[in-house]
Each structure stands twice: as structure tokens, then as C-alpha cells.
Length: 354
Image (tube, rainbow, N blue to C red; front, side):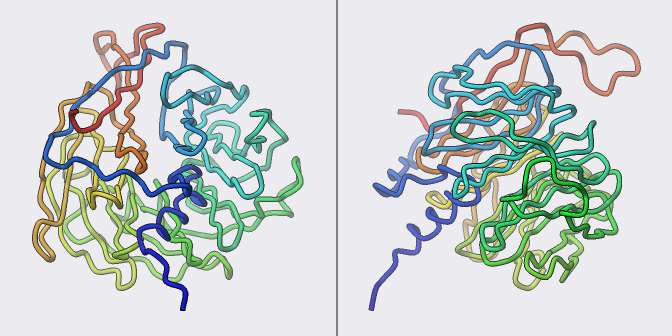
């Protein structure tokens, strides 16, 4: 009987939902867990525009980065801008479908999704979705894209191979009964999404396109970031309402535990090689959490990053975390966030010391 290495199977899945999450030519190098995480270097990118959730491509050594009105594609090793998708108004996130050579951006102001070619990095067309699409995810089981619409409180689903500029008749709408934030796929026919205003997680069957469960997060309020541990069937939800990370079993919906994190969380990550979860927080901290005893989740390190570094992405082949931020002006009266100084945008590269 053919024996499959479980960790290698997880890395294979990662290449499908977040392309390049693993290099299948060789196992991911073991991390030296004896040394702490720290900001090892800063890549100064510059340019104009805000930012939101990053998407990694570790095989291609790329990072897909929403910048408000446009979407940049960066060399993950140098920060060089390899491509720049224009006219992605209010873009929040990027989903990648490497098996069909397509990428997708969720454009929150124009209420559509831009389809682009992963090789040429050129746009192919747009698809209309709901109001204010935010998170977007590709599910390799159904080969569908799911855009989660914050204002209309629903998800728009469509075939990843859809003809560019197809109309709404080519899409399906799934009611969510809450404001969706980040989403992940388990590669087994389910997509999970945080409902921020309900402090809950909803599960969607990607074949029937129906909500199958909604679970209240016990002890967590206003979840935003979401990460998945495929081997142990767990979700890690960063809850900004009370500054905790909640760990949820996605087979039962049970909240297994919580751990404290910094203020202003907006993204989470999970490294299957180290079994560590991460929460990036706007207060300038990156919280590292691990199951230290069965059912007990503890903070193992709080990494000092930089103010505004509220989102992140993780490359599990190198155990490296990337966090975007900038230098900021003084906060003006009535501003939720201070304005970024011109041309000060940067990526912080966090890894264990050498």
C-alpha cells in the first residue's frame, strides 16, 4: 500500500489554496525553534496606496499585495515590483488558482472581481459580485471562487474557469446572515468564514453552495483574521473585539481554547511545520501561539514589529512571516487611522534568528 507522508500531503494542499505554499521537490526545511522570532530585515517598497491582506506564492517566490486602487505583485526575496494590476478599486485580497493559471482580486469599491493571468500578470476581465467584497478564496475541490461581500452580507460563488466579463447569471449567491471577514478552505469541500458582527464562524459546503453550520466563538468577539490547521482540523480566529485568538475545531464547532494577543488584529497565520499560530496586530506586535499541552494554547512569544503592521502572510517553506506597514503622519482629529507618509510603504520580514 502506498504510504503518504501527512506533512507532505498538507504542503501539497497548501500549493492549491495558496500557491507556492510548499515546494514539492523537497520537504520544507526544519525550523530552528531554539531561537526567537525577530524582524530580520525591512524591504522598502514605496509607492502610493493603502494595503490589506497579502497572498503568498512560495514556489514562485511572490507576494500578491492589494494597494487600495491597484494590486502589486512582489518578488518575495527582494521586494521588487514584478507586476501591477490597475483599476482594482478598493481591493482587499487576492485568491490564486495555479491549476488553471488564474488569480482573482476582490474589489470592494467597484463591487467586482478582477480575473488575471498568473504568468503574464495581465487582467483578463471582471465578474460582478455583491456589495463591498472583502475576503476571497479559491476552493480546489469544487474549483470555485468565493468572494465574501461585507455590505450585502453574502458570498458570491463562481467557477474559477468562468469566461471573463460573464454576467451575474454565471454566479451564485449564498446568504450569510452576518458581516463576513476572512475565509479559508479545507480542501475537502468546505470553506469557513468569520462573521465579525456575530462573533461566529460559518461553514459552507462548496458543492451544494449552502451554509451547513454557524458556530458561536466562545470567549471571542469580532473575529477578523482566520487561519487553518488541516492536520488537526482547527481554525485560529483573531478576535479584535477583546484581543484574543480563539481556537475552534472545525469538525465539531467547539471552541477549544483562547490566548491573549495584541490590539488591532487583522490577520492570522498557521505554520504546519512548527505548529505555531500567528496574529498580526496594528499596535506593532506579532503574537506567536502554540499548543503547549493538550487543549492548552499559550503565547510563546510577542514579537515587536511596527505600528500599523496589522496584516501578514506566512511562507511555511521558510517559516517566514511578512508584514506590511508604513511610516505615519500624526493622527488628525476624527481620523480612524493616521495617514501614511508618502512613499514610505515597507514589508517587514520576520523569522527566527540565525
